[in-house]
Length: 138
Image 1 (cartoon, rainbow, N blue to C red):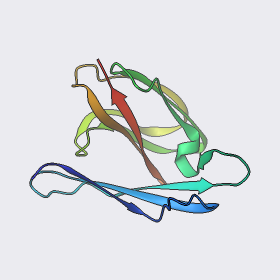
Image 2 (cartoon, rainbow, N blue to C red):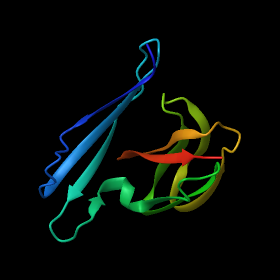
Image 3 (tube, rainbow, N blue to C red):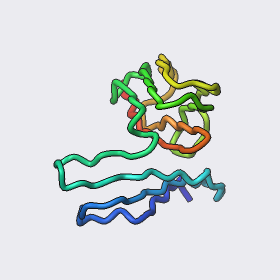
């Protein structure tokens, strides 16, 4: 069997206003599962945009796509313990970026030694967690 990404949640294709969630969990060839991650999304009639709730509204990852060098900018409403890691599609940690108490920070990330492909920036705080997709291209 090949690696698999399980996606679930209650996100509907109808895009009716409300709060929805998506879940992500990776499974490797041996059946080992990563930690399940959850993202909350608010769909509003006030605009045509989908607004992200929770931790995602305080985090920017750019440029995306990237050549392997990119920036993570955080501006949290209050200081809290934050762990930031770059992981591959199977959840394997490629680089630990931060593991500290912060409220605002800019991190320059260099994973230019990895192969082109889809990676994730995993961010966990005391109260929330998120995954941000980053595409590495050469």
